[in-house]
Amino acid sequence: MIKHRVLFVCVHNSARSQMAEELLRKIAGDRFDVESAGLEPGKLNPYAVAALREEGIDITGKETVSAFELLKQGRYYTYVITVCDETSAETCPIFPGCRERFHWSFPDPSKFTGTDEEIMKRVREVRERIREKITEWVTAVKRENKRDKLKVV
Image (cartoon, rainbow, N blue to C red):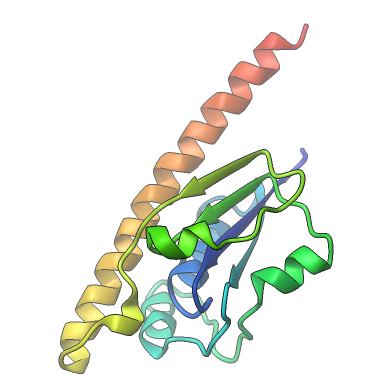
């Protein structure tokens, strides 16, 4: 089976895109090769690291990646999915050969304020929204691929 290549992009590649990458890998890593990158790569968000650790996923020490570096390397993706706000999504580079581009808007955990518990609660909510969106999307892609196979005679 050929795996579709997926790239998740957000501003810093510190929280949303990292969570999306790892959750897609956990949910359907047998069907997708997945990476994540940022427009202005920063440092991993410790709350996102903790939220993924609760899922049994350890990204401690993982490096953030530049979307522009991936573009310069000539990487190709079947799907490019931005998970930042609308304005930031508009500055995302266009990857040649990309079959489809999607935008899924999620709140930016780096802007959350409050106590550690309040911030962690909001990051968990973002993680769960990302999981729900990925689960819906994986089901839709599976359905679409089945239709495409039926068309080939």
